[in-house]
Length: 82
Image (cartoon, rainbow, N blue to C red; front, top):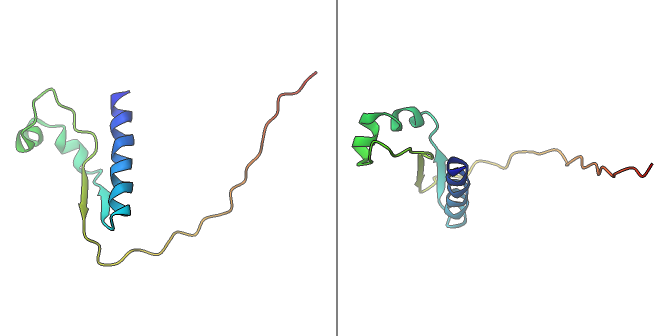
């Protein structure tokens, strides 16, 4: 579950960046290259390392508007007593 743990840590990093007024972006297309021998060598990683979350963080010129969301449809399921 280490990859999941790393992804959760990456999410927390991105949330912390936002709280500090910074923007962040998970660069998904970089994932494949970072897993190669060349990508690992460029970052100074060992061959056995597995990069999980390529993220960039920086200053934001302007924040995008919030996304419109539907109200949640919550349905509680109860166990029947038959």
